[in-house]
Image 1 (cartoon, one colour):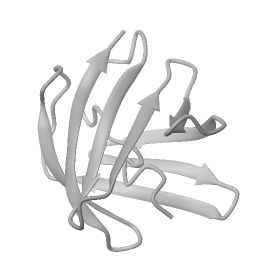
Image 2 (tube, rainbow, N blue to C red):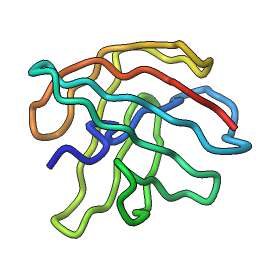
Image 3 (cartoon, helix red, strand yellow):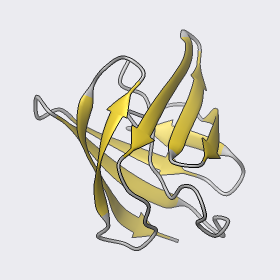
Image 4 (cartoon, rainbow, N blue to C red):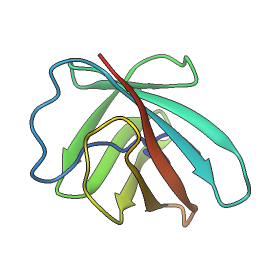
Amino acid sequence: MRLITVGILAASFGALPALAGSTTWEFTDADGTVSVVVLGPDGTATMDGSDPIPYTLDANTLCGETPEGEICATFDAIGDEVGFSTGYTNSEGVTGTATITAKD
């Protein structure tokens, strides 16, 4: 499950300010697979245009509730500006780079 490899999905974590609008993250797995995750201000996230799912952001870990169960991504660093990029590892062992590509 690649959802929120962010994804899930990312993110703006830890001591970051609350999200006023949506934040778009591009997750690139170590194998080159790219997923786009949008974290909405309503506490839901979408991946590649999928149906919204609830997500939480705690410290440097982003978690999403999928129909298959929870998946989390732990980020290497904290940031919230467009262009910020950091490494991540998700709960399935997938690693890669997450980059903020847009903020509304």
